[in-house]
Length: 126
Ligand SMILES: [Zn+2]
Image 1 (cartoon, helix red, strand yellow):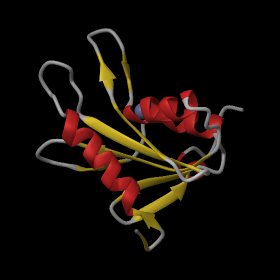
Image 2: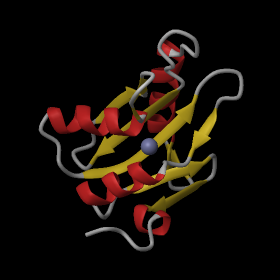
Image 3: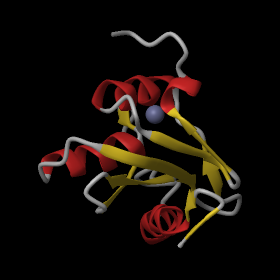
């Protein structure tokens, strides 16, 4: 369903990804993400961290889509799991990665707001 310009099916997919995989102790999986491609498909991911390095859930979700051959993205959203479940704006690295793959990508940054990635990254590295 798409009310007020927000893709609620996408938000629910991100919530399901982290609800199914939430683990704040052993694997540090605390964020889920979902990306809708311009072909209409949804890909999901959760963050993968270790003591020395980590990858954000958005990177994993977009990477999954890329692995499936997708290159054009419509909207992405990330959700913090656990007791304080909420939509999270992307980190700086993810903003640049999203911009680099598709400058037209939209990002759901809160329960009622969707913006183009350029609004989150006014001076991108090209
Ligand atoms: Zn990130």
